[in-house]
Picture (tube, rainbow, N blue to C red):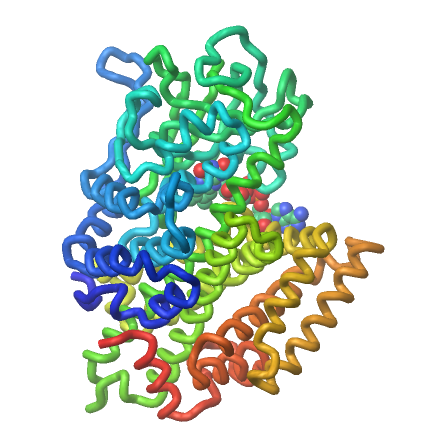
Length: 552
Ligand SMILES: Cc1cc2nc3c(=O)[nH]c(=O)nc-3n(C[C@H](O)[C@H](O)[C@H](O)COP(=O)(O)OP(=O)(O)OC[C@H]3O[C@@H](n4cnc5c(N)ncnc54)[C@H](O)[C@@H]3O)c2cc1C
């Protein structure tokens, strides 16, 4: 039993529909409506619950003791993957002819489909994100990009040329650390021959401590060339070699995780594993960051989806549950809680979709939007992912004890909620990354200030905040130029301030006056309390905000 309405997740989400239209995604609306209908159906919900409950199973060896290194997934997982790939959640936005607003459409589809199950979206996200990195190498791009961008879901370990569609993963994190990749200890030694997929072949030896979706067809892997202090370099490692043999990819264990259980995350030993270099020797971080930056945008959108799923369940419950003779949604206090959840969810959605629009513009060659994307994704990744567990805890409580029970679905969302803040750069690392962008990329600082100020004149309270935040930004950039260590301790504070200012600027331009004013009062001017449900507004306002958030 899941306490969730059987309704289209697209038609009930006005905020998302407005964002898609605002950012040029109209041509994709029919497909999004189809996906939203399916995502809200009992059938899809059952897939999500089954894929989560029936964990992936690792088979290290076959019956004769030979290495197998395969993960078996429940059929429901494959159904979820098939729909996701068919709707472009993998590399669809990078296909030969994605159409206008392709990243906006992909992010909107991710926001819808992630609500069914977040776990399987991990391999889809990595598949899309591998494309920008692979494009740097024409030979590798020729082999892999059409398959990663394909709308065919084609699971199973076979050579690239036998596959209609392919999936990608990444192997960065080792036991000694995932944030500081300078400690990478996997070693790659150049090898003669075997480079059937182009580029220079290497044999990799070492381990990867966290490697999700280990049944993917290829992985972008970091290793040091020659020795453990050699240049850090990126390699493309296929699971099956061109002669049809298996590349050594020894799966030791699957992680027993808090959430995200439909997705297998493994520990892998590399033992003379063949890989081909992507990018120059010593350019590993620069190369892999292209992939990581793309997955960070998906983290923003994925967290917006988790919040949205919690909000929808909370509102649905409150509309159908009575206490003390009143339907919960009609009580002033519950209405305040739901409205506060709705505001946070809307702010997350509009920011994620604005960044997706920047990705479209950047792909079309707009340098200003590329500069905005660089800093906006880091700001969004920090803040939206941090808000997710806060929102989910409160949304769960709206269902009372029922929310705490596993079969209801809220517990699963709650377990999922901290993850996006951890992987692809944990909170501190992302906050420091924002500082790095501010000090190294003045064009990103200018693009951010311009985006903030695009709302100037719409609200006097926002104008005052914009002046303050812009001043703080410039001062921080100057201080960093002279002494970066003086600012690092305040990184979280600065990024949070930037994030809420950016969300306020977007809401003032895109949402209703009630939503924008309530956001400004609580998040910017801090008139609310520490908990959600402390909006300093009356019943009529909170009701209007809740009604806007989830159409009946
Ligand atoms: C479910 C799941 C799936 C994953 N899948 C993959 C995958 O497919 N491929 C892959 O490569 N990795 C994967 N990871 C690993 C993930 O990317 C890392 O866990 C993450 O990058 C953090 O690295 P770490 O765990 O080693 O923590 P550490 O690097 O040890 O960091 C610990 C803490 O210290 C903080 N910190 C680090 N540096 C600083 C600093 N300079 N100042 C202040 N604070 C700092 C961090 O923010 C963090 O809070 C996965 C993780 C999870 C949970």
